[in-house]
Image (cartoon, rainbow, N blue to C red; front, side, top):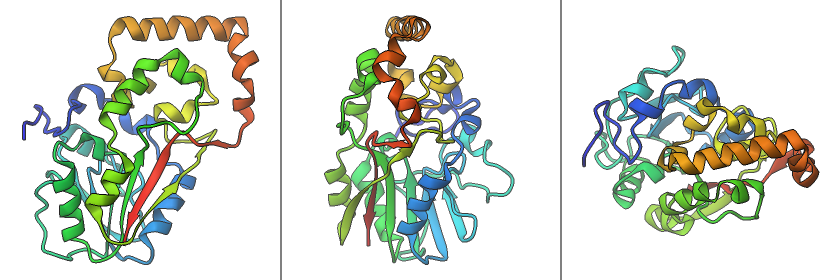
Length: 256
């Protein structure tokens, strides 16, 4: 497996796009509640592809694995230090943890089945994978303004059934609605706050934008900025500003 200079092991170089990531991608407590529910009463938890630590429970013993030095450096001081490692070679004994989790990271794994198999091997209880469905459940405005974004997501995000099959066991797929005021600033979370997607640092916190050419990004910015200024966006989509939550395709795949 090739790795970038800072250790990033997927297709995105977090030495470049990871700056300021933790400030934008703050865990949202409502999304966190869904993950905690999936982890059950586990006392020891493994977090694979842990990044800056979003959604790691703070009331359990957590072991975090993250290949990118840039992301490990952004972990807040109240979390444990992350181990430099990758999903396909977890340095732990069989059934070493009560539960395991991975938060919007499996699309970065070059060997998905091997990584999920490793998670299952070292975990005696539930394995919870937070991810995005590569097929958006509904058509919404960002798909018209930046179709390239969804083309990238469709290529990178693994099918939910593929994740479930690799984990095996008693597996179910849960819908995780995203709140309109989500503190986790991934691109789809701004369905009702379109202005935020005009901020380069906000887009940088979602890796898919790094695969979109500059011309397409400029076209997106110009059209969205013009439609916000003219009121066209609010005329067509303004109801989303007051929609409490929206199904953007966030899913939790849980295997027991």
